[in-house]
Image (cartoon, rainbow, N blue to C red; front, side):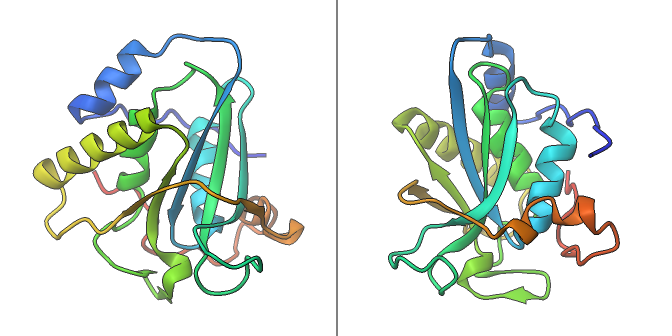
Length: 184
């Protein structure tokens, strides 16, 4: 599947701290991110974090209020599952912010609409607190425009259709949003 790469070292204080304090624990943790077309987002996380124990990355939809996940209101997202303590959540949040333009509301590159918004869907109060800190630090240190990343609790999750899973691994010449790259 993916040719694994070493994730970039975190550079923001909260992300660095989360990496340093990460210690393997029993069970799994979930992190959910949206930053444009989920094909590129999934590709990035599987390529850089696919080595984590018990790692899975699923493309899907969340963040809307209606039952049909393909209607406007839901964001194209990825749901990561990994062994607790195998990576710091702050490191994942920094990676999320580094792999797209978090200053563009409801779009990434040529992809436009609320389904392409930048968002972090937290599963615990601790995740929310860490995400808030990392966003503030990124705003101060790296990002010139205002970060508009939505921060919201994870509610209902819908897996994307099978043909969306592993799309860029199955279709290496498929569409890849030009805004998906490492920014810093």
